[in-house]
Image 1: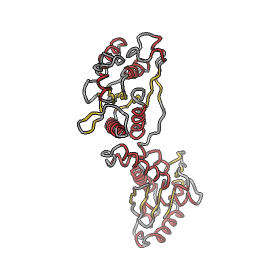
Image 2: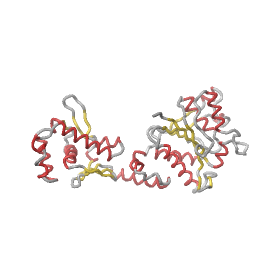
Image 3: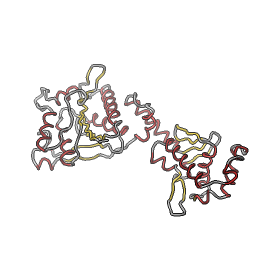
Length: 361
């Protein structure tokens, strides 16, 4: 499926910054923009439409100026309509937010921004380019915060810089000198989406306001700090991570326990040849005798003939699949998977996580 680039800007009384960001992306960086959205206030919308009566605000619409930009520089014209879909104003019931000045305004606006970024980031085929150059400083902070919560790896936070003598004279550079003085800076930011992934998939965060999302995020950060171990519950045959748990059948659980147990005792790497030995079979018999029912295994094929390479590969695959579902962040999950150091005839299997990342109970 075709991917698309979405430009999202905050704007107050200087919508020129939206056109300047489009110029930097589409002309200077050769990144075609497919859609543009502007988060603003009631008066900001009037300025965007060229209808504001103050002498210092532009009297042509942002849409007209962006069309002129696209013609001059022969770039693709992004979708930007003069409607509530593309010019987004925070509202309380039917009353639109006129400015961002009070504590009440700073609840309504971030809620709207958060709702919008949450919606746009749900499209896996879209890349968000979010510019914080325009609007009041608080508006930029709210956009950056929302992006920090919902951004994927491909999403970007941007800031446009120009020389003071060029600021807001026009909507876009008219000559080479003005174009050279216009710069687009990408701002690094912390992405929390992997931490919130469970709540997003379960729709727990979809109906929350921004302040509630902040509170929930703080709880999860504390959980990661306090309980970021993989817990092996022998009695329940469960692996637990954060607030989630996944159940295993006895041999599966003991297969994974075998790797953790060996790691705790300093035996980091295991080959398949070692695993299918008589010694390891006897070790599993001891596991069953200590933790589960010895009679349970007497009729099992492996009890009589030992483990095979197929047994090893099947168990490893099933366990890794379950751990991937349990630990939703792929980078963290990789620490707990049964990984392999491939070497012809002597591949070694191991757990990347340090010993202190496991807790056996």
